[in-house]
Image (cartoon, rainbow, N blue to C red; front, top):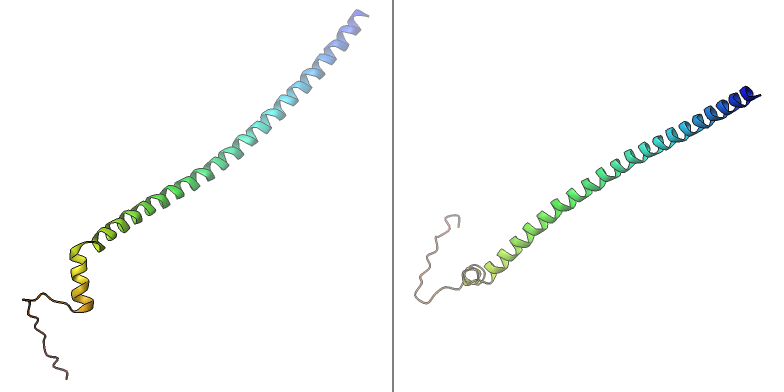
Length: 104
């Protein structure tokens, strides 16, 4: 009777160990799957971040270019250039020579 009880205990222990092993393997599989999925998601997010950083650099460069253009437009040399080009203004003591068109 004692032997039969020990055999039942061994069978129960083996079955319990088998279930525990199966549960651990399933848990390990799920964790591995989730880790791979999170790595893919992290990679996608990193690509997005890199794209935004490139866009930010471009926008900062544009900002600097606009700032430089604003400074130039507000300068006396730009105002003089536009007065000469658009309005045809000259200084009092300045003489302008124009070439004759040979086509006419």
